[in-house]
Amino acid sequence: MRTNFFVRRYLIAPLVGCIAAVGFASAEPSHGIAMYGDPQLPPDFVSLPYANPDAPTGGRIVTGEVGSFDSLNPHIRKGRVPWQLRFLAYESLMGRSYDEPFTLYGLLAESIEVGPNREWAEFVLREEAKFSDGSPVTVEDVMWSYETLGTIGHGRYQGAWAKVASMEQTGPRSVRFTFGVEDREMALIIGMRPILKKAQWEGKDFTESGLDTIPIASAPYVIDDFEAGRFVSLKRNPDYWGKDVPFRRGTNNIDEVRMEFFADGTAAFEAFKGGLLTSNREFNVEKWDTQYDFPAIDSGDVVKSILPHERPSGITGFVMNTRRDAFADWRVRDAMMHAFNFEFINEAMTGSRQPRITSYFSNSVLGMKDGPAEGRVREFLEPFADELLPGALDGYALPVSDGSERNRANIRAAIDLMAEAGWTVQEGKMRNAAGQDFTFEILLNSTSSETQAIMDIFVTSLERMGITAKVTLVDSAEYKERTNIYDFDMTYYRRGLSLSPGNEQNLYWGSEGVTEPGTRNWMGMNSPAAEAMINQLLNSESRDDFLAAARALDRVLTTGRYVIPIYQWNISRIAHVKELKYPENLPIYGDWIGWQPDVWWYEE
Image (cartoon, rainbow, N blue to C red; front, side):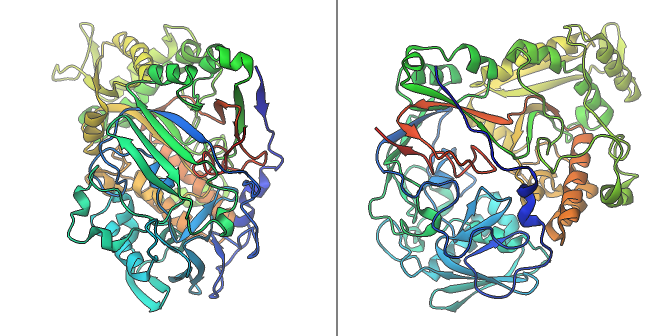
């Protein structure tokens, strides 16, 4: 068995190198734009630093997905779509480098120009930019795409569109967006929207498109074949217009990218062992250590690659819906976190090999520090002292058990917290003063056996407190439908976070999501403090203020006790056929969007 482990050569400090400079980009056309300071790559750069411009083309990569799909349009609310399509089958005006916290370089657009305070952004399209059908990408297509997505498209696009005061064509190939709010990030966000062909949708209902229409885009890959709920195959377009654009050199080298769909993770893993799949990410370290011992591994036909990264842990665990009476009181949520015996669960599930997430931005320079809030972090938080929950200012750490199954000390603490919230054990049942039992539902996707096993342990712990928790298993379609409208008490929750948090944080934690369906604010949090920290992130003019705002936001989120966190994945584990190669120079985001299959190649 051969393991590849590439140690990152860069220190943590350069992570925020492009944050270090103060001030705004000058109002001159540029090949790229950074959230802070200047782009690291010069105008004449050859390729992204983690791409191989000499990589051969050819071959195929086949990955396994759990679940199903009933749509090929990732830009609308309706339907289940293979998540990769949003990134592989569409292009935007600018492309993101994942070797910098937040920097964009020209893709469909050859340049970007911004106002002195980034109050507007103007893009000039490349003359050679074309859709896959050979027709040119025009300013009309761009403007139609922005307005359509911003008004009737998926909710992820509508927040940014609401901040656009005007959009106008300023030349044969140029378009300008003027923003109606002070938001430094908007110049970047607006450059990342997918561009579609307007003429394709004339006379059609964009919001109802499912499997009947394959959207035409300008990306290197086009959807070649599919079978509903079974597979999707994308083929590299031999006539792709942008193969010589610096951002694209050394990327999209593989001829076919195929996603196979399975009912559960066990079936997908067996398909990988049997050779149907050629690449497989593994999130369970114990499984990685004990079950990757099949013949293809022993012969060297499949290799195991371990890939470090420097991005935040994000949050993975079980979210409590504060819209429901059961979890409206933070003391009840705190009791759940004490009852959740992570140390015992970690031993049972991973042999204690997997570290726990300690905060939303842990594993990065953006994570909150131990102990009381100090300096600028405290200054940002103190105006909200009356709103903040215990620990935000004075310091907070997750409950830790003794590792035994009984978890006696934490169960006692949980019972005390429930009593403070008005719930006591009466005749063996947790009840309130009116004699009502404390019960709740845990909604889970039936395809995830691991989360079911974790919840079985948790439910047993709750029974010791006189609490009855009902686990409901539903298929992927019902799961999406119910979570979209927040129809759950508790469920599995996962949100990745970047090294440059910004406007997307409002979609994750903003108060609009309390009532607006389809956001990522599954916990239903309504925190003026969190929104103020997000605003500070968006408008910080120095590295110190940006870091302080992120660390302050981390404190608000973590001490809100909305999610019971489980493992963090501070490295990635990918097993793949030996013919699939990747550059040794890893981006700071590691195995992230824009890496596999973007910069991989197939070599006999």
